[in-house]
Image 1 (cartoon, rainbow, N blue to C red):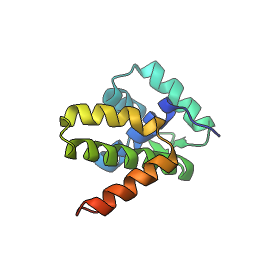
Image 2 (cartoon, rainbow, N blue to C red):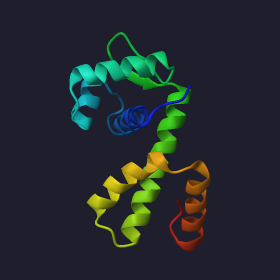
Image 3 (spheres, helix red, strand yellow):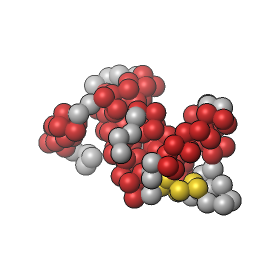
Length: 126
């Protein structure tokens, strides 16, 4: 199933919140993203029907293997692109905003080329 940019953003947010807090509920996603509860509820329903998340009876949200793969891919892109832009002298806040836009638009091929370049030209492992 194809997932839209907004779906990727939700999955990335769930992934980040799970790493940070150990558990996540729709209200946590709403608070983190600044969206209304009805918007989050609708999005969670779409992600659930698409097989990207599971929602437990207590309301806790978990990523399926498919959802986790998408979330990790987007998170890796965001992290690497932010770090690259910061290393080029971009203000960290602007770098994070720009990385958020780029992470969804860049092709796998271009991202892998950037990742390889960064790995070859920096001492820090990516």
